[in-house]
Image (cartoon, rainbow, N blue to C red; front, side):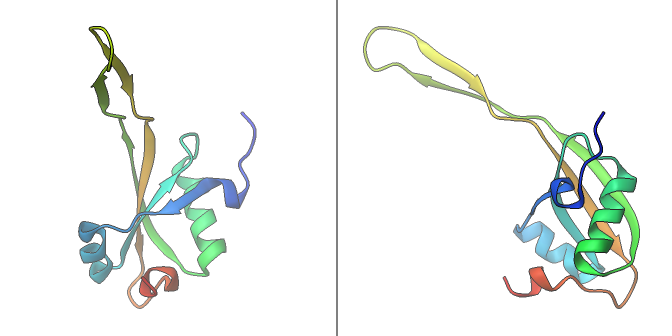
Length: 103
């Protein structure tokens, strides 16, 4: 398995209402590469944002099924959204990631 670079590990930050509430507890959520492990995620966050990471929790989010009707004829088109991996990063007290403060 090829090694992932720091930029490839973190796909994007997740900004939702629940994740905004978690920021008060020094926790931040990211979508990460499916093949990334906790050690790679910790190193990537520490290098990109210059913070100290206390803990990394990961979960695989399964893509939900979707279907829609076909306009002509009878039948349905079925598909599935892509699966992805989420990481919740807990920082040491007093540490902040500025990218979330701007939103």
